[in-house]
Length: 305
Ligand SMILES: Nc1ncnc2c1ncn2[C@@H]1O[C@H](COP(=O)(O)OP(=O)(O)OP(=O)(O)O)[C@@H](O)[C@H]1O
Image (tube, rainbow, N blue to C red):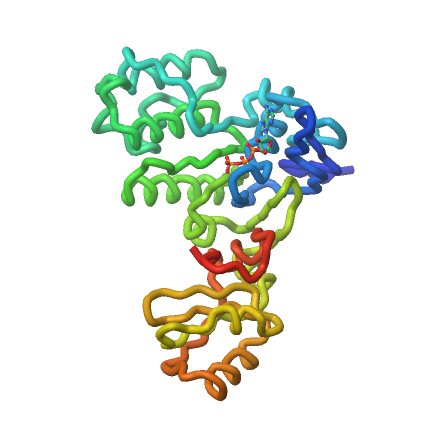
């Protein structure tokens, strides 16, 4: 008899409360081995709290948290999980290579230092002191350290913050490459284009709950509606916001930008009752879907950052 492998991550009815703050209000989430999952949400949505639970750094108030069928602490202890956190402490007086070797000596088995440096794009700067390395290089070093135990699940909290364009590209190529060999990756990010380009699946959270879960195109489709742009100097934004189904109105110079479930209705209004012209209608991109799914008060001006 063969038992099917447990999921890489299983969260079942998970809540986490800090005093009066309900950081996580009931998250159910299953991630299969080999999936690359982006964890998106506005500041304070509960992403870091959830990641801490998966790493066994704190315990859920209620619900179940499992990593490869065991407790997060066991999974971490067996080297199956590793993380790159936003601001992990690094020792400034060691070189990049020495840091990788030192951390490598703590793991059995450990990936060879040379391989890890290569993977993280650090070979050319390996002999530089950590204290003299740039912010992006230090971020690459955190990534390198997470690769040392060759984990089955890699958890990344805003991993590419501070990296330049090439650094990000190298980083994501390394992640995708390892995913094809079965590594599961969960990453929190505020760069929506990275989620769109590199994740198999997007989990969007708001106020401690999952508000969308699917591929990038499924999530975009969840935020139904279209954007209508038109030239209308001095547009009457109040009148536009009052149209049924309009969820945001914004003005950029002479252009007015309207998000609406029923774009035909908006277009008809603009063409028949206003001097608006040069109309353009587009479907939402991931950033607009994000705003639509996580904005609490609809029809606010300037909500289309
Ligand atoms: N140790 C703590 N004590 C009290 N409140 C906390 C603690 N940790 C987190 N919180 C609160 O829980 C909520 C969720 O925070 P969390 O850090 O998980 O959000 P996040 O989605 O990671 O946000 P960001 O994008 O800003 O990193 C916030 O309101 C935060 O202030």
